[in-house]
Image (cartoon, rainbow, N blue to C red; front, side):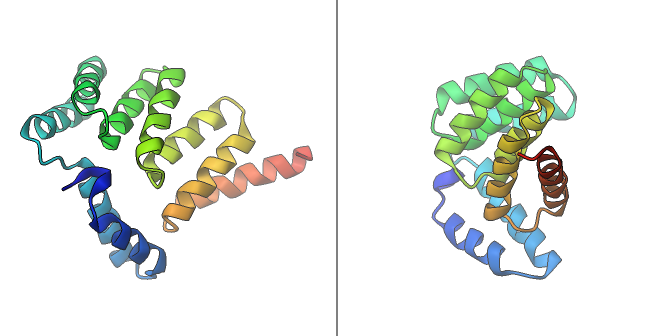
Length: 164
């Protein structure tokens, strides 16, 4: 079993919330990402790795096609939707990215990567209150995201200064 239905994820998330050591928190975050990315199905795993490779090589259109196929093949694979959301974001297709983020979060509500992406898009759109909510949810899932915490505080200050 793997992906967002991996039974070890609940324990990993509980430990992530309680650990103070940065090295231990990094190891737990890496373990969660590995569970999210892994598929026991050979074809799904091959597509995931091909899509990641295409992203690393900045071949966004190829990555989009690969992740679209993976989403079709495995519609309950949260990380497939998250990767496609990332590619859509890279292609400046924010509406498609938000739709894929929604699918990711429906499958894995603790996906701090998807929540971070949503917050960045909402910030870009000027929807600071929505961005704050997304960052808060990401930090609830993973309290070790210091860059997100900094951005969250910046956005809260903007909202306070605006009186909203």
